[in-house]
Structures are given as structure tokens and as C-alpha cells.
Length: 263
Ligand SMILES: Nc1ncnc2c1ncn2[C@@H]1O[C@H](COP(=O)(O)OP(=O)(O)O)[C@@H](O)[C@H]1O
Ligand SMILES: [Mg+2]
Image (cartoon, rainbow, N blue to C red; front, side, top):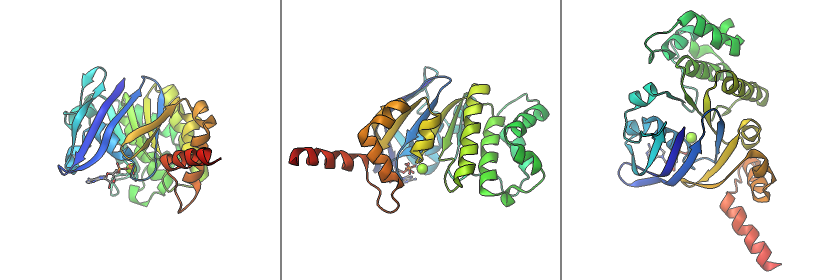
């Protein structure tokens, strides 16, 4: 459904951030994209959704294909209309609108909608949003705002939903609840999902396939089971959970090679 071939992205004409990024998202699947801060995950999503241009970023090489057509030079509004919706990092909601007004705003890209029915579908996934339907979104909790951001994406009925770190800053139980709902949306609404995360464990528990990126390119990919068994990945995950001392996958590999050589 979506394929990135050797995509290069440059910001402000000089800052090279994506250095040959390639990945594939098959229709109907959940694909995880893992990597630590600054790896280029958000840049990858913005390259796909066309939002890069608003930040003076540009795809300077490679191509992005969605349903067999090149989209790397299309406008963000075109790309939304083709069925790609990005849920931005940091749960951007319209703070001054109510929960329900936010949901209505989510359907703006579509011409004919049965609003009432579709809002009810969102409320089935997120009963808490129904309880808070008349509250101003700015006063919702962080978890509720994340739910609202996903609910708004649902209202756009995308073919491909891209989620940028939905677990960021949320309590573990809430994150599990949200990940279960992401899985249900994929299964019940048949929405293809590209899930960007730093939480490797949870991502591997819902994804069909996953990629690990570092410094603007993919360093490893595989089915969740294979990735979990990979010794380097285990160390990489441990590195991820160690606060303050975040090891990179390459450092781990380098260190292991040295260790093997020494022994
Ligand atoms: N608008 C921008 N202008 C210049 N550099 C940027 C911009 N946005 C991101 N970057 C740089 O690109 C790199 C990757 O950032 P990002 O894609 O946000 O990574 P991630 O989402 O994996 O944390 C970082 O070094 C960041 O500083
Ligand atoms: Mg990011």
C-alpha cells in the first residue's frame, strides 16, 4: 500500500535528516517504526503526509508510493484526500472546542458523512470521550486528548492511519488501553496503520512487522517474534529502558563485535 524507496530529506536546504529511508506498509497490517529520539521518525511521517513543506523540509531523493502512485511532491491536502491521516506527536487537539466539536472537525475532508453515526462509532471505541463530549478539549487529561486525536483521525476514515508516539507521557495502563483500541481499529475498520513509537515492547505486541531506525535510515527489520529473539535487539531494548544512558543499536553491535574479537 505504502512504499518508501531510499528517501532523502533535507531541512532548510542543508540539514540532511533522512539518508536513504526505505520501508513498506502492506494493506491491512500494522507496521511499527521504532527508534530513539532524533532518529527521524517524525520526519518520515511528515515526508509521507506532505507536512514537511510547512517546516521547510523537502524530499530530495528517492520516492514515496501510495497505492502505486508517487506522492512525494504532493500537497498535504491532496494526500489527506487520498486517504492518509497523520496523528501528530503530542496529541494536537483544538483546545477551545469541545470533544464533540473536535470530532466533527475531523470529518472536514469528506464530502458526504453521516456525522451522528460516525461519532457514535468513535464513542464505541472511546466511551470516555462520550462522557466528556461537551467538555472543552483543553481540559481533558493527556490520555483523553490522545484518544480524541485518534478519534478525530477515525472521523476522516483514512485508508492509512499514521500515529506518532501515541504512548508519549501516558501511564502504562492507559497506554495498554490505547494500544488495544489501535489493534481493534485495524481489525474492525480495516484501517492500515503505521505506528511510530519508542515503546518497543508494546509496539511488537500489536504490530505485524516492525522496523528499527537510527540516524535517518533503517538498521533492522523483521516480524515481531524474530526481532524479540535477536540478541542485539534485546540489548537495544534494554538500552531504551535505561534512563539517561540510551545505547544505540550500532553502539551495541560495535561493542559486541569488539567483545567477540577480544575473547
Ligand atoms: N523543522 C526542522 N528543521 C531542522 N531540523 C529538524 C526539523 N525537524 C527535525 N529536525 C531534525 O531532524 C532530526 C530528526 O528529528 P525527528 O524526525 O523529529 O526525529 P524523531 O521523531 O525520531 O525523534 C533531529 O536531529 C532534528 O533535530
Ligand atoms: Mg518524533
